[in-house]
Length: 228
Image (cartoon, rainbow, N blue to C red):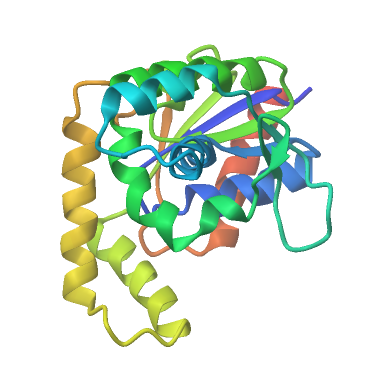
């Protein structure tokens, strides 16, 4: 049988979320982008009027939250439901205000610790494809299949630039996006708590120059090998 817990890690714009969503649908598994939990915690802090810069207050709040990620309950374009203390916040966590504040929240060690426990609670139920930057190393080191999906910074910036152009946003240049990608890589790889890196037993796939279908085919082959 195929592995019931699949971890996909990698830097921003490596394609991990897209690949994971396709695989989860094919396997009938829960697609779980762990980044939504940091968004939910950020939304909760903003909803309660907390200062995002108040690390202690944001951490205390996060430790009390019950955040769940479940299969989609509505046909409105969502890939999953995100519930915060029972409240559906699937779309609320995509607001510009959350976008602007989630980065500092995601680096608070206490927040990461609290959310790691919640991510493990969901991941250990199995039949899940989990996506993030520390799944195979910290969140779910017992995952039956670990993949580290990478691509060159230039390739990843080009992907983001195409997305920006498709939205008709003239304010971001390719050079700006490339600088942001490199900056994010440095932050994610250099942080003291759960830095971005491939697990020692992860299979590293480089998606530079490859289509989504080509990468999915490679992962499908890995799953078939594990299922044999």
